[in-house]
Amino acid sequence: MAPKVPESVLKKQATQAKIAEQAKQASYEAKQKKRQDKKDAIASAEKYAAEYKAAEEAAVTNRREAKAKGGFYVPPMPKLALVI
Image (cartoon, rainbow, N blue to C red; front, side, top):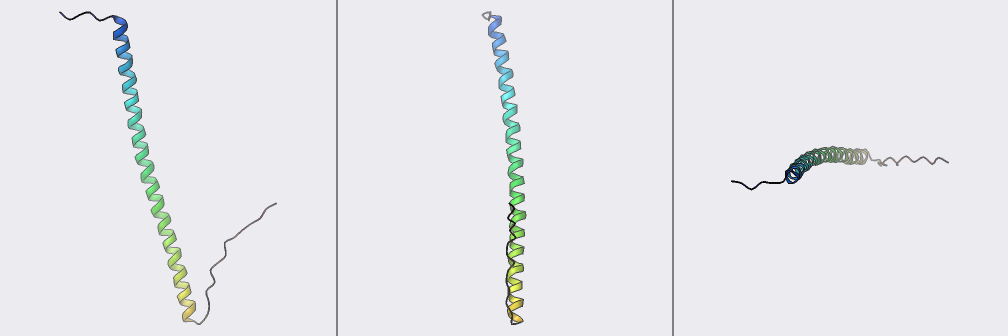
């Protein structure tokens, strides 16, 4: 015959099991969110890298065209607004 376990111990075990399950679920959700955030960051970085590469290629093309025509290519200056 199995020894009797006090009801308070059973309640505590049930509560701890419930808390452990909630923690496990929260951990899983956090892990999934982290994965999705990482995918989003990588996609964003690839998009910006492609944009920068295209801009650099355009600048090189413009310099080559200007040199072929015997002129100079002056890259555009960054726009700056000073508001007081």
